[in-house]
Image (tube, rainbow, N blue to C red):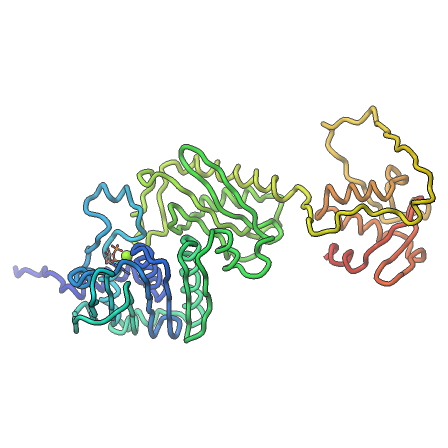
Length: 454
Ligand code: ADP
Ligand code: MG
């Protein structure tokens, strides 16, 4: 019998290993951005061409590498971040597996320029197919710049798996956003085919999220916070009306690492139950801080799946924190401080005698009885004018109070009652419609009413 087992050459072994870590341009983007963050950079620039298929460059102003480290960085299992197995459970850095640069260099053409601030010269390395083509001293700014060109140039089968430029750019954008939101103190820039897509200045979490979400985002999200011995939860969630049919902007982070979790997503989705329509998804950016020894980050090569020791406890805390915040920030009527605060005085009030207001108390009122909504009929008889007899004598201020308590959801009900009025009674004055209403007049701002109904 002849022996048939042989050791694979390094470049083939690296190419196979790369299959787990680098699936598409955005995987390389994630690894390079995270390396820049781990290097303590305060400014990170991502420059891509043709959705990363032609090139991906990450430039940082971090601590840089020595000449030997620059060469070592491309070896498989070469890392400065852990040195023994216990370190795996004290992880504070984004990387630790020491395989990203080795993988990238196995499936792309790579150029590295790096310089430490204590040195006058930096190091330049050109590497492709896991082979170093050039290494020399060079002038360079402090920090590191890594360019990856022609991803999968030597693995055509995998290059064929890449999707359209639009799809690949989307993946890159998502990855960029995940890293940028996790590190608001770092400024990030993204250029695609020489066009600036993001230019995010160093800031706080809320600003970073709103910078990413775009205009008016500040009024569409509100904070959540909860601290327990096991987990600290912070972050922002979108108001119910911002829920979308698609699942964009649903982000979990643990110890500043983005991760995916359908289990925790369920905790949030159910917390929103009854507040958002079926099959819509709320926006959230949730940051969990837990003792690194209580999670396992190393269950997936891309580290986007995390195992939590107290998964069920965190689920419940998350659920109740969101419920509480929804109650606190969403259901209480919002106060608009920009409105004129002076009282509205009725016309001709000076001539009227001052009457001391009387307070009527309803002895049968029971605060523990659920509030019954006014029932609106579709005006069958002209006498009731479409209003439940119970509310025949309702005064406009009752409606106003009712409207204020139930602002968004009940406004259409009020409108519905207005719409059920006899249209012959309706008089248009500019943008207002005026009509008689049981014992009163109803003034409708038609534009706002139409908006509310919609
Ligand atoms: P890991 O991040 O898991 O350690 P990588 O292959 O991504 O593995 O990187 C290998 C090593 O190269 C890192 O541990 C780090 O010491 C060094 N390195 C990589 N990128 C940078 C960078 N941008 N700045 C400074 N050092 C870097
Ligand atoms: Mg890394």
